[in-house]
Length: 260
Image 1 (tube, rainbow, N blue to C red):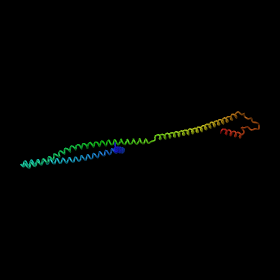
Image 2: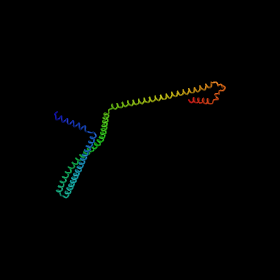
Image 3: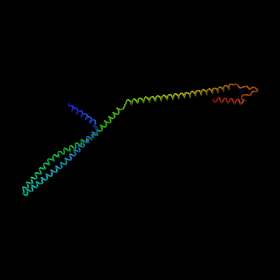
Image 4: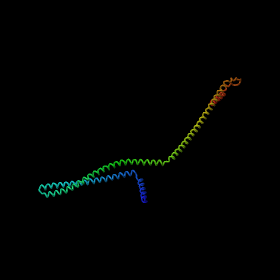
C-alpha cells in the first residue's frame, strides 16, 4: 500500500469518526424525515408534470383523430358527388392525421403506464414517510431515555459515595455522643434530686423523733406531778394551790413545752 493510500485512509477514518460523533440521533431522524418529504414533493411535482403531459398528449390525440374522421367524411362526400380526385386528396389528409393520432395514442399509452408507476411510487413513499414518522418518534423517545440514563450514570459516578457515607458515620457518632452526654446529665440530675428528697426524708425523721421526745417529756412531767404526794401545809406557809402566780407560771411553762 502506497503512502498516499495510507494517508487517504487515515483522513477518511478520522472524518468518519468525527461525523459519527457529530451525528445526533434526534437531529438525524428529523433531517431524514425532511429529506423524505422533499423527495415526496419532487415526486408529486413529477406526477403533476406527467399528468399535464398526458392530458396534452390526450388532447393532441383526440384532435388528430377527430380531424382524421372529418377528412374521412369529406372523402365520402366527394365520392358521393362523383369527385374522385377530391375524395382521394381527402383520404390522404385523413391518413396523415390518423398516423399522427396513432403516434399520440402510442405516446399516451406509454404515459399512462408511467403515470401508474409514479402514482404507486408516490403512495409507497407516503406510506414510508408515515411509518418513518412513527418510528422516528419511537427512536427519539429511546434516544432521550438513553441520554437521561447516561447523564444519571455520570452523575452517580461523580458522587463520592464513600466520602458521603463517612460523613454520615461521623455525624452518627456525634449524635451518639450527644445522646450519651444528655443521658449522663439526666442521671446526674436525678441523683441530685434523689439526694434532696433523701435529705428531706431524713429531716422528717429527725422532726418526728424530736416531736416524739417532746411528747415523752410532756408525758413524763405529767406522771411525775401525779406521783408527787400532796404537800402538807405547814402552819404559816401558804398552800401551792393558794398561790396564783406559781400556777400561772407553771401553766405558761407547760404551754411553752407543748408548742415545741
